[in-house]
Structure formats: structure tokens, C-alpha cells
Image 1 (tube, rainbow, N blue to C red):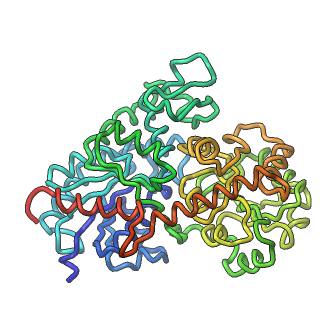
Image 2 (image 1 turned 90 degrees about the vertical axis):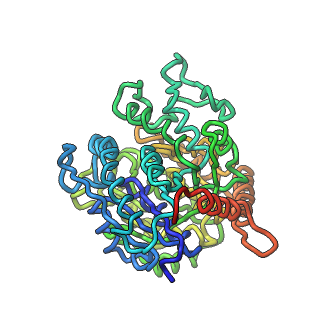
Image 3 (image 1 turned 180 degrees about the horizontal axis):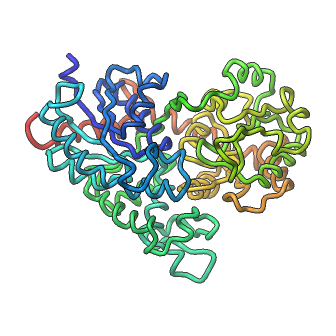
Length: 490
């Protein structure tokens, strides 16, 4: 009976980059027979229900709205997700998120007492976003097990946490610095700071939020991390000694569908596959900077000129440059060298506007490298296919991910940093040839290491009678502790 299955509440922050990994986690949990109540603000829940993804049709996933009045926080009426907001309003939404606490407490109370909800069973566990540190205390009020889920990698997350707790770059006069409680991460350069971190001084709004939120992680019963123990141990060990709670590496947790109804594919999967099938093995560079990042107009021009200067096939998922009106009609030919699309389209290059089937593209044998912002989801999608990366980090933990990929595991070279970096077409040519050139020894080493990591990931997810990989064991440990340590009667 459905009512007899264990019940988990999932509660992500209001951002596509947070919601999508939580949807992937929901799907993973349902494969184990768990029932999921997925909580978010009204507009986000309506969008999720109307999407064509498998999550919206999964009978074990129930979507539940938590009331949220944006106008009470000086936000526009439809400002319930960061993706469509400028930075100042996205920060306001983040600052407003603790106001969800009373309604979250009300919802949990009613779920426990079976007054609301689709499943006739109280929750066994709440898994919340790392921005919702306050949710652990509320969850424990009802005797329910609580875990944080982070879609980031261990190393990048550890750097992020330590940076915000310590703000070490404010205490040195040098361009380089180390993290006082994570010295094994090595030296950092000020260009590896996201814009919000670079200006943080402990009194700015983002710092104030993080200083309140991050210490609350200690109140949780554990942290689920979307990574693999074998190649990301250094960051996981940081949290084990820092928080003194279980840290489970359960990755990769990947959602393989377009769950955003606003984003229509710029190219069909069929056309993409036909085009890739006609290319040699390891001969195509895939270029995509994620769903929320884009480069400047001048950087876009230099990247295009660089592509013109190398004999490499490419798929470029192109979005309007920084500062472009997102509501206006974007015509890529107006921002690229004259004749660029005509020279390259179909034969050597495929220029795709907005969105492409990334999972399927990276899995194709013709892909030789991925020019990426080093968002962790994209990193995992690349590494599970043994594809080395060219890094161009732009925000959040991406700078730390790039450092990790370059210095710690050796599967990446860095091309540029951020949207103000003065990149030239010569830099573009040099880095592409370094990774994809047929005579490049560096490229061969990168591909070899990426294939090693691919095997590590595969082994971590082996689930056989006589062998369970590290990610499978970690997930089992989480389930066992969750069922064992829930306080109170069922």
C-alpha cells in the first residue's frame, strides 16, 4: 500500500539551479520506493506541475505549495525564482526566504497530523536546501530527522563555506591568500572570487545572510552531497571535522530532462544526433555556460574569432550577452563576426540558441571537450562520460570547481574567469588546441584522467549482490539512520 511507504519532504530554494537537483533527488528516492512531498512557493509549484518532465507525472511525488507573498518583501508579484531576476532582486528573494519559517512549521504540523498532504503517513525525514539552515530546528520540533542536500561538489562547497565564514581575502594585502580552516585547498587568487564574495566585508547584505545561515548547518542530522567520495574526498573531510555530523557523498544525482517550460530546445535531439554522428571521435567541442550565466559581448566576439581560428568542430549553445534585454529578440548573428554562422553552420559548427540536449550531447563519442562555466551539474555530466573540460567560471562555487578540476584531479584547463576577464581570440585558440589538438600531450593526459574519473563514478554507483559502490553505501547509510533516529511515534 502507498500509505505504508516511507515519506520524505523535499524543500529546495527558489532557483532552477537548486530545484533541478532536488527533482533528481526526488526521482532517486522514488526508485527506492519512497513517497515524496515536494514543497516550494506557489508559482514554482504551478510551473513544475505544468512541465512535461517525468517528475510531474510520478505518482510517488506530490507537489505542495508553501504560501509566499513577494510584495511583503518589496519584490514584484511574480518574483518567486531567482532565474528571471536581476542580482539585487535575487538577493532580496534570498533575504526573504527565512520568512517561510512560520508557514513551513504550519505545513509540517499538518503533514504530521495527516491534515494535509497526499500520502497517509507522517514524514520520516525532511531534506532541505543549504540556504534554509533554519529548517533543521523547525523539523526537530516535530521529532523528524533532518538532512541538508547540496547539489554542489565537496571541494567547491567547502571553499564556499570557508570563504563566507572567514572572509580571508579581507585580512590580507596580497592578491593571493589561503583559507585558515581549509589550508589543504592551497592558494586562492582574488580573481577566483564571485562578484558577491569579492565585495563582501561582513556587513553587506549577502555576508549578513551567510553569517546567520551557514552556522545553522550544525543543527542538521547530516548532509547529502552530490559528489563521489573517491575523487572529492578533500572537501568532504573538511565538513566531517567542521560540522561533526554525517556527510554522505551520494552522487552523481542528475536530472536528465528540460524541466523549464519556458525553455524550448534550440535544436532537436534528432538533428543534434545526426550532426554528431557525422563527426569523428573526440573531434567536437561543446560550448555552454549554463542556464543562468552568459559572457559579455566583447568576450562573445573573441570566442567566435577563436573558433574561426582552430580546426575543431563545435556545438555552441549561445545566449544573449551580458546586459542584453532578456525580453528582446536575440539574434546571434548581430553579436558575432560577420558571416560566422554562414561559414560554420551545419558543417563545422552548430550554433544553437538558448538550450540543447546537453546530457545526450556529452554522451556522444564525437565530443572531445566541454567549454563550461564549471557549474557542478555540468561538471558531473561531463565526467560521467570521460569528457575533459575547458573552464570559464563566472559565479558562486564555479571558480572553486575550476580550481579543483585543474589542480586536484587534472581534467581541466582554465580559459578565462568571469565576465570582465580580458580574453583574446589568441587565448581561445591556445586553450582549445591544448586540450583538443591531435599532437597535444596535455590533451592526452586530460582525456586519460577524465576516463579514470568516469570509471570511479561508475564504480561508486555499482549496486550488485556482492558489491556496493561508495555512493550506494552512502545512500543506504542515510536511509538507515533516517529510519532509526526519527524521534516519536509513527
